[in-house]
Image 1: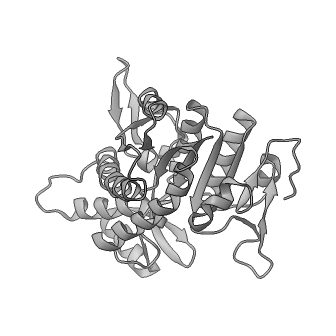
Image 2 (image 1 turned 30 degrees about the horizontal axis):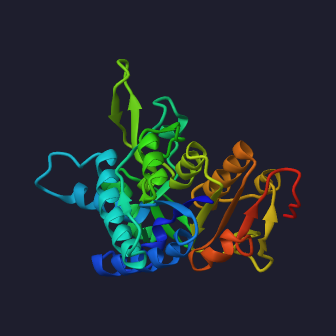
Length: 308
């Protein structure tokens, strides 16, 4: 099969963990070791989040006295693609010594009139206390939202419209490469009046981009890897239960947070509805079970045996 696996940025920098280089490299190695189980039997394309990392770079850029203004988010996303792509390629190559592995910096086209530019929802950066968030909001003019008991910065996250480098990715996969691409949802770009692309201030949701990429590559399955073992009904309460199998209609009927599980579910549903194939949302440490339909939340086309 041809599988697109979307790896969450929090898998590379876990909640409360230091933003230092060493723990992220180790986390990337562990992630690559798990993903390699897929690549030994299937064509594999890996996308990854960058929320924690791009937030750190944005904070550093904003605080740098040598800069007249901070680096824009399209540039920061490109930086994270190179950094995280390097870590994942190193880990995948170590786990797959006889396979060609490559990371590709790539753009995702969005619409300039997307209403998301006026309603930021995408979490970036580290978790903060409410007091720290209030101070930064006042000092920097940044927008924050609750992420569990903590606060995190949020930025615009427009809907991906096209994966610009999809033809190159397809050629590499057809040539036998394991490809790391569309990192951080892709470098966000819009077309100007001449049809030329220019970067914009946004971070595209990596799961929605992964779903679009999976469709463009005619993938057989989309796997969304996160830090929980599936989608939960009544998440965060004593009544929480994991949804094992569901159709898109059944999943969309659940009330899910817009900035976290919501986009993952929407990405899985969009892929299933567009292709009639399956998607699954689950934990990194169950990737083999996810591929085999034995773990996580399996999203099925309408008409199959879904039971949300």
